[in-house]
Amino acid sequence: NYRLIFKNKIDYNKLKKIFSLPRSGTHYSLNVLDSYLEQLYNFGNGEGKVIGNTFLSEEKSLIYGINSDRNENLISKIQFLKFNFVKFKRPNILNEIDYDRFYSSHHPIQYDNLIDFNKIKAIVLIRNPLKASSSLTLLYFNHRLRNKEINIKNLNDYRHIIFNRCDLVIKFINYWNNLKKKKENFLFIKFEDLIKNPHNSFLKILNFYKIEINENYLSKSIKFNSKENLHRIGFSDFKTITHKDAFELKDRIESIVEEYFLKKNFDYKNYFKF
Image (cartoon, one colour):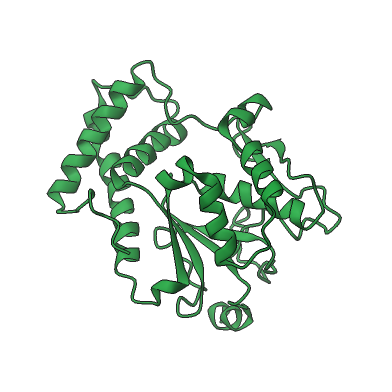
């Protein structure tokens, strides 16, 4: 019933959705776009607010629109189709869709069961699978296993985790490569292009959704959300590299990832087939 009712209520001509491979610029993209829209709709100066993380008090999150006079509706951080599982109860109603903001997910790694993919227009963020898998592995180690010392000597004990991260990346890449829907309904952005030329990448996104272009707002949004500026204002997130032998560990993880891809006959070098 949730699926049937909610599908009928979605205005797919207005919905703005980003599907991303993990470690491919998801948060960076959302923050820049939130910053841009905050200025465009004139309820903020485009400079995010740094707040503590609810679940991990030593970490911080970047929030936009938190002090808006629109009751945090225009650019709220309540994610699309994300239920409140804090009390492990299904909600009585679904969150209202705000068509003036962007929503994200890692579909099909995390399924968006309520989306009708025959109607949606969306952005897809992708990245070199080798780099994405190794980064995702390091993120898991340093986020989920932060109390364990993982190094070159004991890395083999965690190969199953590396393989699992690889399978997630393969699943994402294969899904979007084999997508049978209209390809013109999807704009694919490479992480490498996003980092190398963010201005051009975000212009493509704004034009794709026919959002008004303001070069000054966009430049300010990109500058504010740069890694250098966020570090300067005190924003910190969990690190993907923490150990003293981090670079050697990273290279070894990439080697294991590459071996696994070859074993699976996954063409990680020519993955972009959209």
